[in-house]
Image 1 (cartoon, helix red, strand yellow):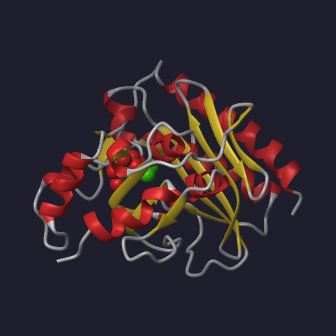
Image 2 (tube, protein in one colour; image 1 turned 180 degrees about the horizontal axis):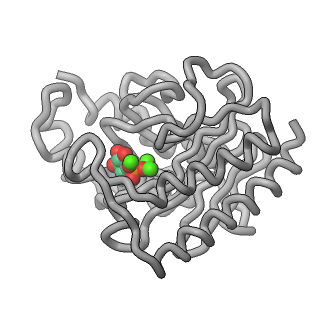
Length: 263
Ligand code: IPD
Ligand code: CA
Ligand code: CA
Ligand code: CA
């Protein structure tokens, strides 16, 4: 695969999709709930996924698509070329804030991340990464992450971590919140990964993410030296929902061993 040619193709596709999303602010959007009242989906989530799939099927008929809204392929293995797509990551923000959401896309070949994209649609900021070719914030090359420690770290995590749950030791999490410099919650896994890659936060963790939430961000984060795993320190799951942590390598192990403790 010619990564350079693919990269230009994908960038223009993403920008075209972003244009459609920004235009949707001028008309009414249809909002529905999926698994629960707060799990929102709009006509734009569906239309943007279909837009990508139409182009991929036309221009790369052998490639497969794994998308959140289910218009793509039934993916059971990581074999072949797969586009992992979240047409709008942060739908709640899209609906309520009209900002802080992103298009997230990762291109994987036999389970290896080749190209990754996170497009902050409203700010027109594109983060992207090319396997062994570096990570970029628009045209600026991102620097390798600097060494840090827990006390000076900002951790992206959402408030649900404070709610006791069946699997994790809540006291250890509360201790983490005390020990770090600060916590942040942006409501888009993709943007939180982009912020990790650009050094604005030092880790991002979530109890449940899907492959399309993390696929693009993992390619970008890897290029600056970030580590991405499940809470069990296994490679992040590309086929189904799982726990997920992405962190500066100097704190990843400590987060897993000291703070994210299974009961
Ligand atoms: C969600 C966002 C959110 C995360 C959820 C995801 P969606 O994606 O990334 O930040 O906490 O787990 O499902 O549904 O808006 O694409
Ligand atoms: Ca969703
Ligand atoms: Ca998502
Ligand atoms: Ca989504």
